[in-house]
Length: 298
Image (tube, rainbow, N blue to C red; front, side, top):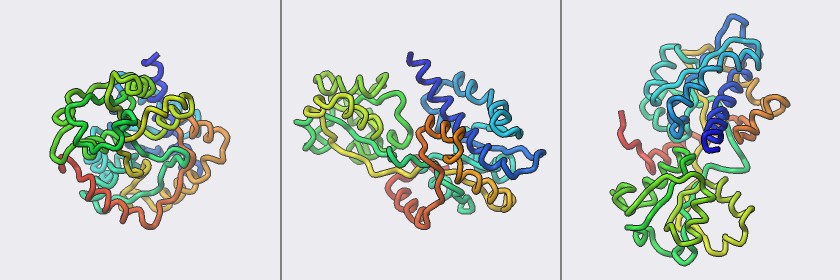
């Protein structure tokens, strides 16, 4: 069952990539091939085998969706993806929100084109403990056991690594034991029952648990919660892509949620819509970089 769930989640990533192609291809010339790059960070929780399985059918998915050729290639990190984009080997890049801001510091010419958002479940995370421990400082959790669900996304891992420990400490230095667990519901049950001290959960998982097990909430509470992290960013290098091409792509994507077929794919990847970049987006990014600087700047 876990393999099926992980494979389904992986194909969700493919679905969003195919949406990127279908949106821009409406006005593109038939001979053009839309090249999308995506960072390996999106596949962090998947084996290389599953990642390749996801990538393999991409051209067929694109052709079935749009009748146009397209391709997607995975880069090991944002630096390599940016270099490929600058060379024209990828027209667009898909970045985790914080990942984009890290890349934009090194590549100031990298520009956000649009955001993939989910208005119902913002990118937030919580460290959940038994209610009796919820008023304690995080320093009191030193030497405790922490579980991290295997499907936890990079933004939540980044947050707990920087905010769920004493300054200067790594997770494995602060906690006696940090281990993966199959799913958040199981981990929350373990905290409730006292066999586990803390669990890292994303907002979507925490909200779901509160709906299906309301009585359990009486004994659980966050000890800390994150700020809202930025959504997935679709970015480009203006000098490497024709403006008319980018404009047509953007116009098509902004109405993707109004197309029945595309809307179904949006629901699959828990995206409500694609939205314009807010005017203060880059300014907010400066604050995020200060709070979460890259661990190993390249």
